[in-house]
Length: 480
Length: 72
Image (tube, rainbow over the protein chains, first blue to last red):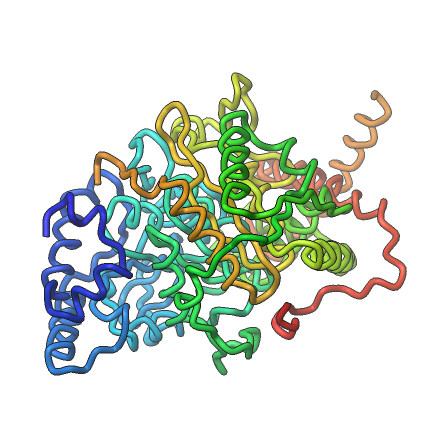
């Protein structure tokens, strides 16, 4: 397999070739490992590369497949895993200094399920410290660079995961998303990122304190939508180790993905997003809506009256939930946090319990409003990130330039990059980001497709139809 | 405008006292400068949460979990 072939290959395509013996899992794993050796020094997407374990797993996969024991479409497929997801015997840092030497003696449920499905784990990916922030500029492990333009961020907090998939170093990655952290890097790296319904994937084994428990989900990053559906099928479902995981049965998402989309009602929320997004994102999003209409879908404006309260609900909820996890280490090892992260957690300790409960009551109102909207429409679409990837320098200075204006990267609502994504963390609704165009500078931008709770099937159908019609997936970063 | 600034500055002052108490209680070892930064950050968050006051929440139960929500 050469580089040109690898750019086009996706899990759904390559799995047939693995099953038929045309491609060996060892060959595929070696190909990815070579690519990692070539690109990772530049991109800094992997923090730990598990070469020996990956090759050993690939040999087992090859032996099993040759002897007729084919486990399914993820058998022999190389994955990367965000470094806040526990991997047995492999360092898991959560992007922190505190856990720089921690090797868990267990696998997170999502990792165990991937291994059961025959997937090959290539290593652990860089992330923002404790998953806080959308830049993957990490004070201890360095910055992950965007494969489309190395001067720019890859997004975050699962920036390493986004960059491994976008550059072809891995075929898929598992990340976490408590504010945007899967969808943001997916948008900035031009790939697909899914934050499923809250509880759809077990959170057991995600490092505590790397995402507010009630807003966080484990998510999936892939090159294409059908790959994402295949991965969700393998890792979703109830887990007795996670009391917040859902008992809903897991449908065969990949089976229904090509169902026709004509007549599907698409909601667009007026107001909130318009005030956030750059002109380039606005134009790309408008074009994407035209494409959805051309596929026979029906657009309808929907209203969420308390939409503007979402940032306050999100900030209050996440900060309080995270801070409660960090209290012990804030007291015993405060110098093992970067000043910004430590200050943010200490600041959260000043939020009164009554404010947290009030935030959850406002959250109920917002959830009800989304439920009402989703009775009128099947899905809701929105931009993923308000602007294409800014430069690393801009982010370090704390200001980015959008439409000729300098704006602060952080304001009281948190990072300005996450404002389009957080409505779906606050409501727990599934939301998938798919590439919806490129900026004048050749940077990808994303559109979110969100559905009702546990309605990932319809989200996949719409995303798949759009992806085929728009064809943005055919572009690849030159570096890859 | 001046009244708003004065109110904010009073807010930061109160918040600073809270940070100092927290620092003493938990032993974070914060410097004077860090106490100031955290107090300002906390006051800004406080301002943000004041938005909740504009909503009538009578009879609204808080969100507890999503996982038991019925499939739509």
